[in-house]
Image (tube, rainbow, N blue to C red):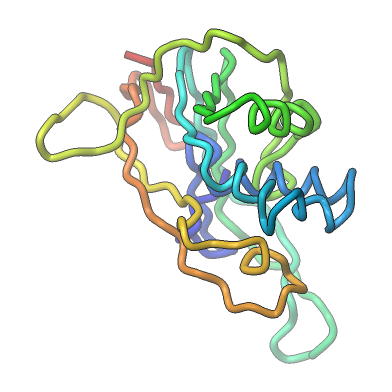
Length: 209
């Protein structure tokens, strides 16, 4: 999962799929399976609002290995319009040996049923290289251990910035053909319960704490 502040030539990875990427993946599945009119519901943006307003949190366990490497990619040529050229790009690929638990807090059974219609069909978040495999739904999820950063209550761990939907967003703002200008994303600082244990020039290993 690439940091949204990264460039195409230097992409640092996030340890988690961001709330923004999760919501967009759900919307992508809804449109793919049920068409762009999925969001009409009984009221304007009813189903979109269910995705936008669901609270998302996480529970992490296991070990993370971040592999640092340089790869060849293709990008549009500056000197020859319409053609592409090879260039070298920095990438981080993360292997996780235990499942990530993504926890949704919903307001009612209708919202729960709508989200469960599409969540198990998602196999990547953000870019197509960010692969995930759905395992199961849990009726009683674990207590989240990823926390929002707060100066009043500090915890040990890794600090990372993640994107989320702005609460003013409507479906027209995220629809590429909607014609409305996009509302800025909200930024959230998460403290992940991870500690660095091993590292070299090729990789960095983290354990959950």
